[in-house]
Image (cartoon, rainbow, N blue to C red; front, top):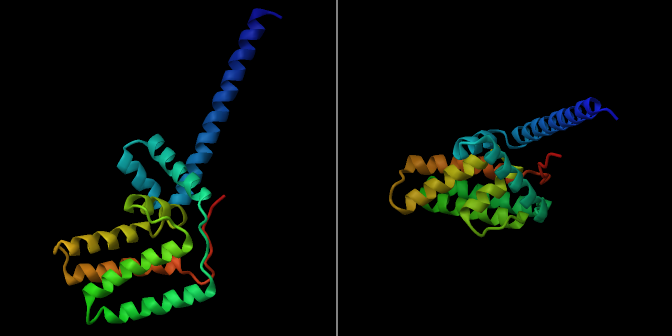
Length: 183
């Protein structure tokens, strides 16, 4: 075989590999953007690097795939919903108690679904995989509970925490308990 033919074949193989790599990167990026929505943009902002953000989000997906996250049974959903209604009603007379109970109920629901509750940052990362559009509600609500514990949150802040928790709760206890896993 002629040297020129070998060089052309090698260049074509390298170009083909490069095109395939870029195509796969593009597909991965599109998948992560679709799956994580606003959480994708947040990860890029926080890391300052698209590649690092995408690796972090992919790692989250891989971690969740190994866990046993499950939907709630109809009975569990009904019981949690009844508890939530009681907490919301109590907010008028006892905002502090209601917000603390809402925070505890969110943790209880997540535990029932199978999310590990080891540390806060990991909880947020885990919930972002199946519920990326409401994970910021979790951050907001929890941040207000923490600030309130330090005497730095007003009744209006607690109202915002209840609204944030309501959005997260509604998705975690959705009637059919479906998982929003994208393929």
